Image 1 (tube, rainbow, N blue to C red):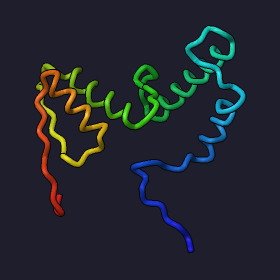
Image 2 (cartoon, rainbow, N blue to C red; image 1 turned 135 degrees about the vertical axis):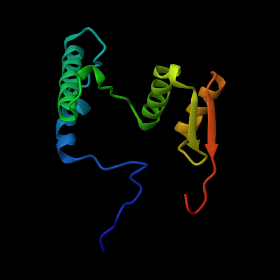
Image 3 (spheres, rainbow, N blue to C red; image 1 turned 135 degrees about the horizontal axis):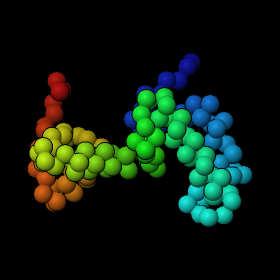
Image 4 (tube, rainbow, N blue to C red; image 1 turned 90 degrees about the horizontal axis):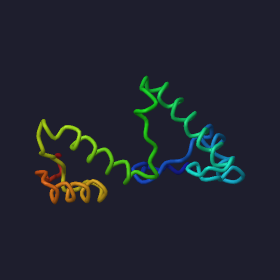
Length: 126
């Protein structure tokens, strides 16, 4: 029997080509890319190469690519970034009551900081 995994919202398997690229940085080349020593500088360079590669695939500028540590950080950055960058166009966020806690907590923070948030109910049809 083949097992099928359907919770890709929680986690996904790492593609083999990604794993192959990451193996050195998970064991041997583990230096802090923010440090000034050579291993750190080497890793900072590797991050910048990855940033450029992602930008090329997306037809973006490399300064438009941000790496985050998790989905929650990504949600937080996206919501706050879009809303703050477009404050002159309005301050209203619409979301559903069943969003991930990272989204809901960010929306609650936005409310405390002057934004209006509408939380939509959901039912079996929406």
